[in-house]
Picture 1 (spheres, rainbow, N blue to C red):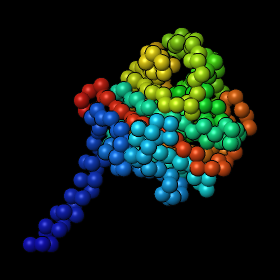
Picture 2: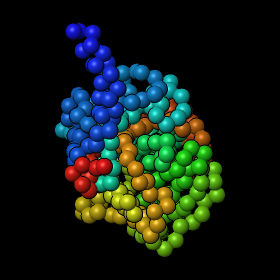
Picture 3: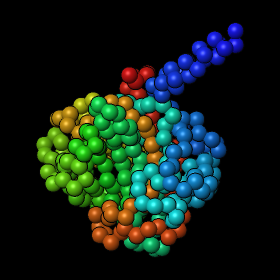
Length: 296
């Protein structure tokens, strides 16, 4: 009797794996107070050095706060995913995403470093292609925030994005382009709101923790942050009026920290150097609230 039972079990294993991979997260907050994750898994494709990430450690600037610590490995090669990264165990979809984090302060040590902190969603499927929504900071100038999306098939990717200097209240551009080197076309009207932004005095993503988030709807994405003093929600970009560039299918929720050798921050064209030290990103918590109890 053991052989038939074993055969049935072996046949069921692929179905079990598929079933697990199709699961969606309900609402959660990962507060990184423990050494293990409840809703994420570690997923770096680079070196396997243990120092690259630890959860449940004391913050360097808020000693009573337990954080997720990401340290970039100077031995890792360039490329997204090579550095430390966490990935949600299950899928996420339309909903509100938020995180509280502090990027590394490296300008006095290595002002031309080429390093990126990414807070984002990312998943590729064969038919609809890429589903990505992101916040990104380049360490060479932590007063600048990059926000946007990537959609489409490999080789036919579409980017809508906005670059903001929050310390100075400058929107450098809000644009659409195809692939990484395509011509940027300025966005206007409902796709360019707000069209001005007030400066946040002394904003510096490396100086202290800030809370950032985005609301992902089928026909609209709103990126925001909480004002560090008043707690008011500041809208960084409310992209609407079209579905172009708005991901429609499921994704995975992520945070990463990696070296770039060919993407310099808007204010410093020299900032593509390989990191010289294991600079540290601190993440206090990440949350997700779907617009329905379970996404489909």
